[in-house]
Length: 337
Ligand SMILES: Cc1ncc(COP(=O)(O)O)c(C=O)c1O
Image (tube, rainbow, N blue to C red; front, side, top):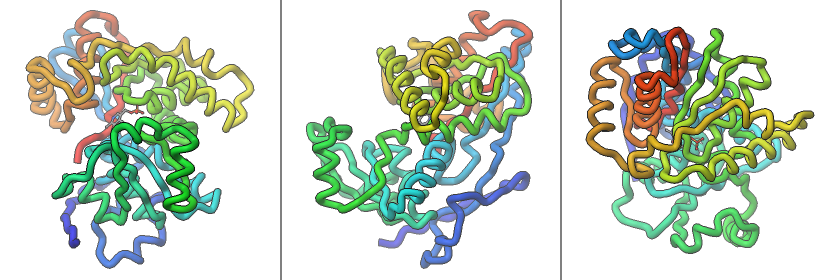
């Protein structure tokens, strides 16, 4: 299968090549994956009638511009995982995701650029032709392995993983959504790139890994901001527990000498009512907001993650939860291809 796509790369400032873009690129017959990385990601001010009326200084950290295929939190989450895989001498990355998973797409690209074999365990039945996500992943060399919805439910269990090792040999396991202690460490770097102080840092939440990283960054770097999270799933209060677990793992892996989950609990809040019906659900209010925002600020956003966090933050400004004189940065976690 030949898969060719042409990308226009127009990043002029602060261009930097990093871990993913190393010597493996020359092994490719042709490049379908960009080797350009934009770091630190740009911070842009969002000024409009709502922010001006409220007297709120709103910023957007354009993590979506980091890379064409490994954008936003995918870059952050994979960065230390790939380092770890390399340190453990692994040659193969195995991960999990749905047929439209941004994480599957980005892992295939990162593995390709960095010289790892990749295996994607995909939830559900194989369908032909492959959708754009899976076609790209396969073209980037990812081996696709389909697991029934029932089998997929066991993806974190030792027996299931053992079966995969038996079938595919040794691999470095990146969990679904990429969230683990190494991902948290990667997302922490977003805070390192913020030179100013903020009252709030805000992000959309799926697994909570990105939010956990932001909180750790603020704690470790003695910054005063609190984190506001907007889960995109309905009924996502389980995230408090999941985030505490991620932080406990991080504490163990990185030998933190204080109770990290406890310290973190006081530094973030989840707003559970901006899910619009659940994952990838939308309504007219959200669609109208997205059309307005994109026209006003000329920044592409999507309805699954960034549309919901932006809608939530504008609503919190309207409701004066975010008050006059406060400074807020929203993390644009990507999700656009
Ligand atoms: C574009 C985008 N934004 C935000 C998230 C949520 O991140 P997390 O799972 O770390 O909460 C995801 C899911 O990984 C995503 O793909």
